[in-house]
Length: 373
Image 1 (cartoon, rainbow, N blue to C red):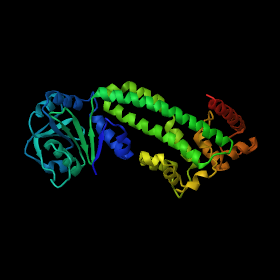
Image 2 (cartoon, helix red, strand yellow):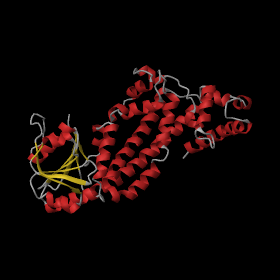
Image 3 (cartoon, rainbow, N blue to C red):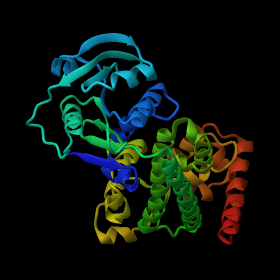
Image 4 (spheres, one colour):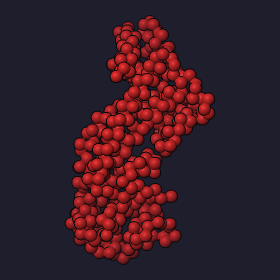
């Protein structure tokens, strides 16, 4: 099935691709980002309005369907690409894009492969990408548009100024969603201290965190497309995204039901593969966490293991937190434990036991204070 990603509507990025496919696409886009020699050569072709068909791989699969043309096998330069694009045939580069292998080639893809493209150049690019799985670029002669094909994915490039505008809008959206996420997590923390958590509360917090995570992923895709033009956007994203992935992992570790050898990291991977609609559906997330998919499960009373709140205490490494969870099993048991009980845990001495005891009290006070703002 063909997946179209036109970055005019960036929501299609999250809806159209699984995370692993997005990572492959990002890898492909990095080769074509502004500031790279390949992008410079493509921009020269766009300005000349000659059009072009470029294959970024020289595997036997490609060479078997390449007919005619002539061998070049020389280092890639933007000017060489510009000159060779004046001919009608395709240009074959190696996978890294730093050598030109052949030019003026006719690509004989299987005509039985379905394609919705109308232009000959784009139809050939589409079929070659589907048949071989390699990265193929079609540069439109009349519309001045670069279209990337890779396997079943089609990606349409936009102007750098357009992507910059979209990225800045996405950063503003991210900022609002992160504030909502932080508010949801503060409320969840209070409920955890007061032993009032239900599965519904956990899922609502997880949905907030997941929405922030997906907006971050979307902005990262835009940064890749911007190349050297995206440095400021990258700095802002780094600041806004600090701690979000860790918060998500610890939240899942606190509440997922361990089945067999299933880990929290694997649960994160399953959620990453969900569509936006599935993430918004509390019952879908409930099933992934191991609580089933019935409405009655949302009212279940839960006790966190304590990973997330314990990680907020200063100078408490994760191995020690794991020892605490293994010993006491829930956050409430840790809160109820005396200094002697804490001292018995591996990696915790008298000084650290007192620090944990006092630290949790101060953390609760701080969270209650944060709730007021």
